[in-house]
Length: 295
Image (cartoon, rainbow, N blue to C red; front, side, top):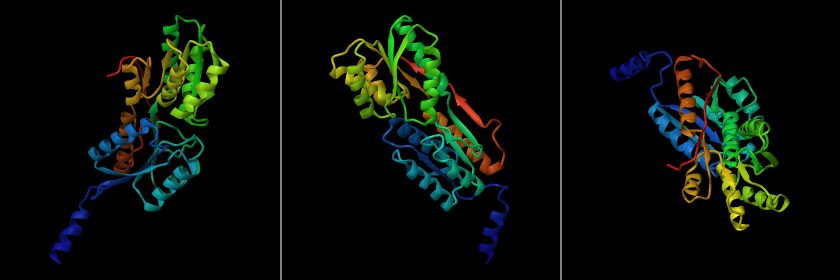
């Protein structure tokens, strides 16, 4: 009887908003077939542990329906908060708004969603990253020549923003964009698309892939075709990109710090769950940087 009373007293004396058990945070990303999200998940797990939280993770496997179901399941499980990198800007809007209505705070990371129901978005400034990639190519080509642009998944905010920044700077230069075509952020798709583009546009000087998987696929296509000396840059600073850079197969990549993005988003979520204090800004950007030497 005395023990039961003491246990109840201990709970009653917890600070308002405090949790006796670790916070449970649902987390879903477009797919672990993308190395960028493998890095993000690994560093998110580490960040959550430091914040006294545990992550319930779901790999959407590049399927919007699976990701929507994951968010709905998080709500049913009554997790404390939800962290999402949405497949596209519109695919999860109803699920996010339903979670918010249920009193569960939602943060987006890397990719945005078209809704104000999100507590905070933390991501790289992908427009600035696209600009940095364009500047790299312009400098390498001496502000002349032609470039092929491989875009990401249609409708994904990262794809839209990277293209916006890249095109903005490139269109003000003397370097001409020969063609801009989606390769859906995939390596195999990047290779097949590049093989086709080489046939249609045999004379080009540079290639920009809006992620490292696409540019690696493009590099493989160029290698098979016997093309050398092209200026190449990807986006994400993945381990495979660094390996290609060390071998001299890839010129550069853009680092957007996925672990830092996830860590900051988690901190905002945990702070809100504990204090109900909203972040000072609803959108927080981390500046990407061009990397020309592999670590």
